Amino acid sequence: MLSASALVALGNIGPDAQEAIPVLRRLASSGNPMIASAASHALSSIGPEGKKASVAVAIRDLADSNEDKRWKAALDLWNLGKEAAPAVPALRRVGAGCRSGP
Image (cartoon, rainbow, N blue to C red; front, side):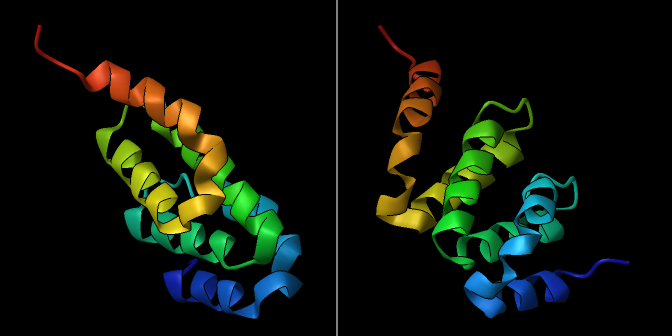
């Protein structure tokens, strides 16, 4: 059984763990919130390529029908700060869909 601790350990390795990026991308969208969160954190800790992958996962998850996944994606992007700039158009689309009023 995969543990969140193993994913955190991968993130702690840093750029030397780049080979794990494809697997972490899949796990970052896991139905298990602990695994998804740990995988997202690990991705963002594996240097520039991991951060790019983390942004790509978050952009994909912003369009998910699951509200928890959308919130997690938005939080992941917030945690990435300026690195999340490529996600601005996706965030605007999501924001436009949330507006209410006149």
